[in-house]
Length: 291
Image (cartoon, rainbow, N blue to C red; front, top):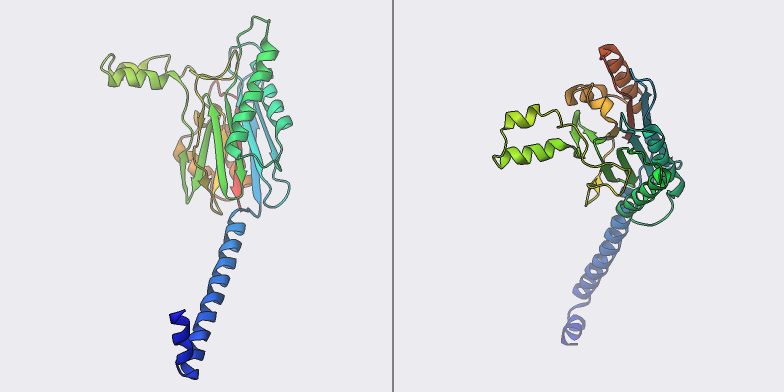
């Protein structure tokens, strides 16, 4: 009360200035609050996601990769992208990858408000249950890898099982976000513990054998990001089966990913075709360009 009374004891000009300053401060706080709200709203939306797709059989007799996308039909709408790679040499692995894709696409709702990281885990559970039912009682051993992501606003959430990978392309460089689930990790640990040499770990023929996949029970390992990765305009998210990165180095991928998503897909297809590797595996790539 004493401070307020002091205000009225001052001269009229000084009191008016103080009141004007007080009102200006309130107005400035209101404007800043509105701007912060608009920035938050804008940062939660992506104007558009441009896509590119590579899906080729390579030198194999059948296609065991499966891919799909859902959502993203409207500006700013959440989007799911999936690549599943049936394990070569196992029975019906191509059908397993298709079952995984179908289960995830059928259950996915881009408008549902569940946190995207939880959505991916729930979709993985549903896909695993679908595959287990398919294989139940058959006595067959089969399986598939999985790499999937959800983009909500400017945030990327990803999940992987096996050796299908998720990359981020930004500023001309490419970095792998996911980690392969293969025996190479176990061999490296044995080498670091001194039980085998690093040379033995590197030359072991089992190093590329998968230690986690979907099929015959829940996967032993699941990779995912615990915090959302914030995307920027011009970024590209690349989801691939192993037929892509066994044919192209990371540096070659970086070159291929220049330009828009469609042009990048054409360059990947052309470069792998140019190499014409003997025994080229099925190869699939989904390119999601943030615009």
